[in-house]
Length: 477
Image 1 (cartoon, one colour):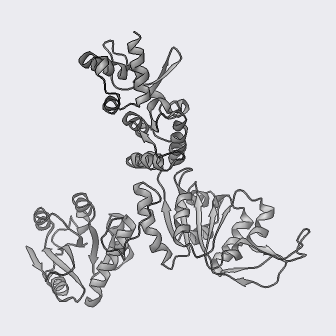
Image 2 (cartoon, rainbow, N blue to C red; image 1 turned 90 degrees about the vertical axis):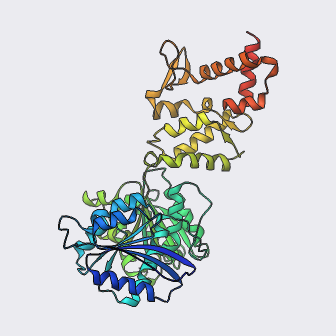
Image 3 (tube, rainbow, N blue to C red; image 1 turned 30 degrees about the vertical axis):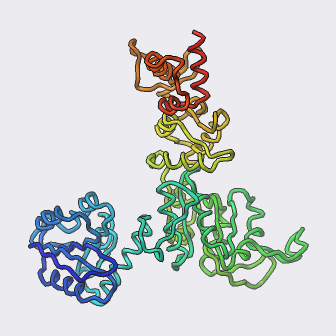
């Protein structure tokens, strides 16, 4: 049973597929979508079995929403959950809502673990259903970083490059405008935790934004820095001083390297998170504050909790929502964009980069320094740039040796990159040797006197200055 129904044309059009083995449920959703008053259009395709659905979706070029019944009575070995990943593979931007009369936690958890975006109870009131669907859409597009045409919903930071940062930047307005009071950021050193904090700071410009590196302040000074003190509270307290927490009231407080907090500091911070109160050292009364927190760690805090080195109750308070940054080696598809971005913004730029150099950098794992290491490598390459062009020869030797020892080598003290191109003896060619071969063949065809240096440098993918030096050596042979 495959059934298609269309509503009148409106400003926004969405294609919806609905899988349910109950014909009454199929008819009910069709009626709701037909009679709604929202300024949207729904094109509904209804299916009563998984086989029916699989045959029907082959004819659809675009699917915006899938509403799938979890429990299908006639297909005991299959559930709506079984087609979630298949749908996402065919339609990457699809929004999937699992549906059931049973609202128990197991069903919800099972749906989310399978990759569904939301759980939709069949008990929801009809007039709330459309609102629910559109709210889920708004939340999901922000979470995924999908570009949308509605400028009221769109928020894009152009300050940084890379798919990861673009997606996160679109979550920030949603977080700031929510009831969330604490954000947890986790990622290896150099993955971009500070960049995310800068994005938050950019978005909440008119609010206080205080930063503190928990590992840089000694435990003996931490409490006075956080909470402040009154005159005479201890030796050296000659005046009243507000603490950093008090200064952050009405805004945000960033705790960098939060895993390094001492036990006493964790207890003190927990009180602030729970009660939104601070007490200056030497005072007998608490002051009300209104603070939202961002905490960052380069080691998983959950592991610290398991080891007994971090309070579980504080961890629960800090992690109302989390942003997990994968290391650069797990998001290599972003490296070209990051390289082009850094080439654009580095001091003395903009620079360009030869294709060969780009390919080499994209192959390196960046296993230690992540994005920071990539940025520092490009900065180092500018030392040997020629006419603002970065070449493979300018890649620091330490970067290649450390990151990809199996693809580098030395011959007579000359450092070179091994590539999968070999000479007649089966030996890997060096970069210089490849260029020499290409240049030699070109000269045989055109002659030295007919070479257009600008055109040839582009064809060979090398800098003009490098080409000029090589041509000079050929003339001297």
